[in-house]
Length: 80
Image 1: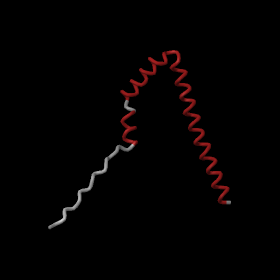
Image 2: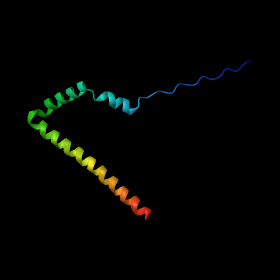
Image 3: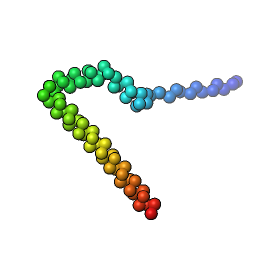
């Protein structure tokens, strides 16, 4: 009487986030998003929303740069 080896269950494969994000920002998708934003916000408020979004992104980047600079200063002071 021989013992049959157990079959392994296949692990469920999930897509990495990079692949999901890569397919998300195609030109046609961006055009549809802009058209919906135009319908929701209107032509008068759309530039204001874009300006606010740009300022938010700049602030986000500058906060990361500031935290990187602070981390470098801490590393230098720890070395001394």
